[in-house]
Length: 133
Image 1 (cartoon, rainbow, N blue to C red):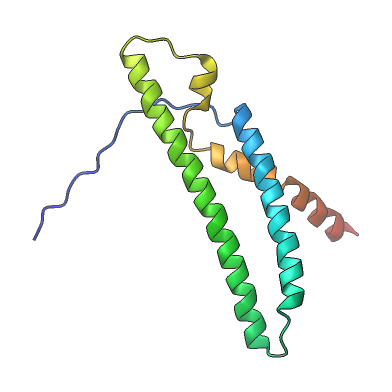
Image 2 (image 1 turned 90 degrees about the vertical axis):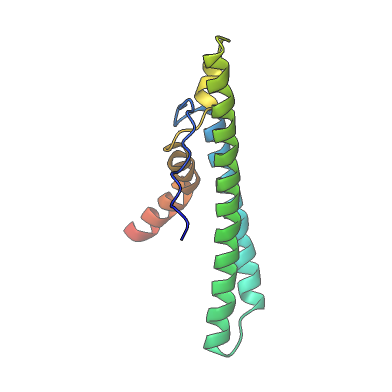
């Protein structure tokens, strides 16, 4: 039986959770969610079967593919930020200057939550208005 290997933990610089590009990514994610909502509305009408089982399966497939697409986008953005953070850490260790803007752009665990928070603002407002009315 193989010995369990210890995970390799690379040192990185941690950036800001609310930097400029995170706000832009959150806005793009909001538009992506809006596009998926419109697509779901159109495809939902096209896929309205008489059988409730087929409706459930087709709706579940649409939600699954939309969630997978958004997860893949988030994973790619996070991986890019981690690689950038490793490079900035190496620059710092070599004595090269690291700009404040580059330092903010580095990976932070809260950045994804911030982006999702921005993306969900319009939908939360609509939900609150409909709940109150």
